[in-house]
Image (cartoon, rainbow, N blue to C red; front, side, top):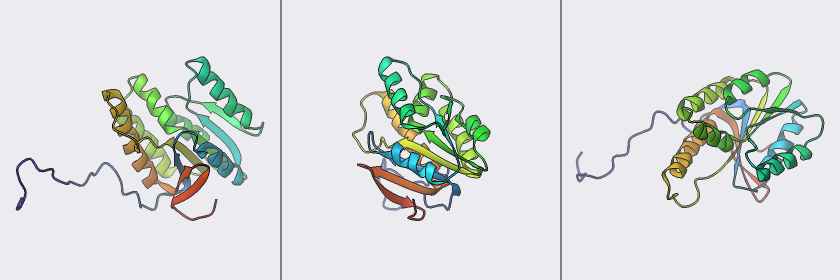
Length: 198
């Protein structure tokens, strides 16, 4: 290329990641935020405001006592109107089974699900594509929560870098497929995409 030195990086469009400003599916809201940012509480309130039957699709697995306590705390925050579905791996299948007319599904959260897939040595890219296919066409009301992990330093170990890369790509894909995207910091929601109504 003219003016390009040998070894210079070449900017090439990535066809595997859709444009984040794509219109998306109005049935899907994507909620991002850091740890303890208030994103899960915002997402729960968003689901309840829909006045539809709330379904909590939990991806967490209780591998130790500390995680068991966290899961118990989350359960205690929800009243008896919630239906809880635990699915650490087959998220696409769980969405197909539980989302639809009259229901508001809350997925909490994508990054825990990614960690589960990697621990189980599943094909992360294939599983992510399956979830994205469902989110692109799902009906009803679906709210997806995930941790933003790309704002810190580059991790030193390979596995952590792979996790960060998988999460970043998946977040871009889900944001493109969602009708509304929200970023929560200190309990305050910033609308990144979609209208400003809650």
